[in-house]
Length: 209
Image (cartoon, helix red, strand yellow):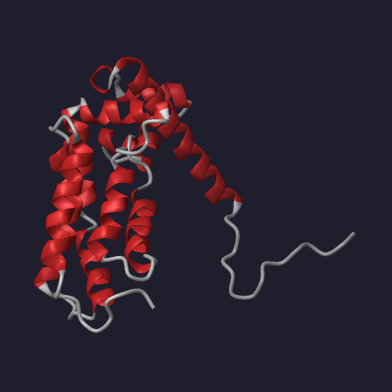
């Protein structure tokens, strides 16, 4: 019998059985919740129904998702990593506001009309006040982390108010566009303003290395 393959030095150890089981349970709960919400509407589905559909107790459900709204948004840490990478890994010559513009357009589905599942998900969120408010609150939690990366990439001091302002308004712009008939146009106009205002503020590290 050959020796089991060992992870390379410095690489993270693969998740153990317990971690895999927890992740599978969490995913089953999130999948069941989203399926029921899409079928019947968010307000018409109860926590106990979701737990039954996922074959778990309500206690187990709340261990994974502390509030009902969290069942719909299960990838916030991944989203923050993606958001910060947009700034750190932008192509040479692309401004930070323009990199965040592309992310905002994609994140809000302005260019995802070819995926009916994503469109259906957006319709669920946009038609449910509790989900809209929760998602915006969750999204704005990334302001501090985004402002820090903007400062690092721009050669500006940590805590610079201009970096915080850019981060806040970049995250707020897609939310403000929801009420308009053409959200893509609104997002573009907002980021045009942010890009013009950002010109001249960046320090010596004006682009990705």
